[in-house]
Structure formats: C-alpha cells, structure tokens
Length: 154
Image (cartoon, rainbow, N blue to C red):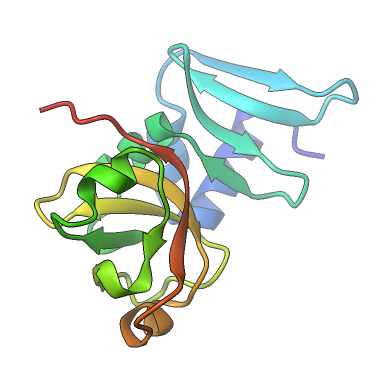
C-alpha cells in the first residue's frame, strides 16, 4: 500500500515521467485517505491536484494539470485542439477525434492527458480513449473523455 508522500511522488514520476512528483506535490500537501488508510485525494495548497485510484494510478484535477503543464516539456501527455473545440472543452465536454490537431505520439488509451488549445492554454484534463495514432486517423469518436474543464483565465 502506498503510504507517504515519497511513495506518491514515485508513482507520479512513473506515470508521467521524471519530475512529475516534485511538480505535483510542491507546497502544503494534504492526503485524504479512505477508512482503510489508502490515499484517495491529494490536495496541495488547498486545491485537488490528483485522486489516487484503486488501480494505483492517478487521475488529474485541473490544478494538477496546470502543474504538469508547467513541468513537462511538450508534447508530453498533451492533446491539442483548435478554436472550434475550445469553449466546449473548457465547459467539460469531451474531445472528438476529428478536432484533434496534434497529440503526443506516446499517448495510449487510458492515459491521463492535458487538453491544450493550439496557443498553449490548458483547456481540460481527462483520459485518452484512443491511441495517438487513432486520434489522428479517426474522423469520429471520442478521443479524450474530459474529467474537468479549466476556465479561461486570460
């Protein structure tokens, strides 16, 4: 069972790449646990950055997405869309394959991803439903199941 912050940081580095744990958990960390002691929610400076699933993987919150976006060099874990998708994705709607402009070639179905506007603004966080290759090839279908949209902060 994952116990301390070092263990959670190691899981983040494994899932997202070196440095992800340091980026996600930089600040005042609060780990909310289940009755059995398993980590469930991780808040940093009062914002939920990740949830820890029973499968041992993190799901991102918007705050975690912002932290990873700053820490990971593009195109890592990114799905990029254009103007036509921006308002819908920010509102928490799913990303459809035909609107994907570019994607990290390493993305696999089930990966946690950052959905960005082509200008680099973070629009949402979610789970890839298709591989990177399929996102580029398909003209229909959900590419990313959006978990949380990010309001426009400009």
